[in-house]
Length: 114
Length: 111
Image (cartoon, rainbow over all chains, first blue to last red; front, side):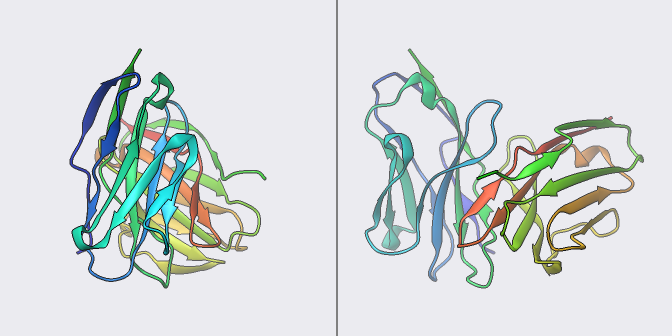
């Protein structure tokens, strides 16, 4: 069965530190990849997505992610985090071109301290 | 552009009671999804509609859960009777061009 793994369940950083959150998926075919963010008290929002083309995609708020097909990975990065980045981050995969349904990872809770 | 609307935002019921959630997708989005998000986990798809037809309900516990989208716009998800393990956030999402947009969710607590 298709699955998405997020290895970091809880990450604690100080402001200005660099961030990398891991995401691996278990599907060998063509995939669409997403990172969603959920700020405290808010709904899931799209951070960035990869459908095709340049494997390095840039999203909102300075986030970027790199699709490495050989590693089945789509890691999220930000060079310098801010306190306002405190949120839960979810990696998701769509591997069924007949639908847009998503398979989510378990999420990574990021806490950034000033 | 208005986002996905859901109501109620919170619901507390006792086990064996019934409950219903409502969702209005983004205007023009033909595809609508219901996801269940249990605390500490990522959202899991319950059911997907394309217009008013069901595309995928393989993960929907059909003995107690039902959903409909009669006019191809808004949708209702019902649980009857509820169990303790149904405590979760129920998310509605809609999509049009490969990207799903989520509503604020309904947090259900079953006592």
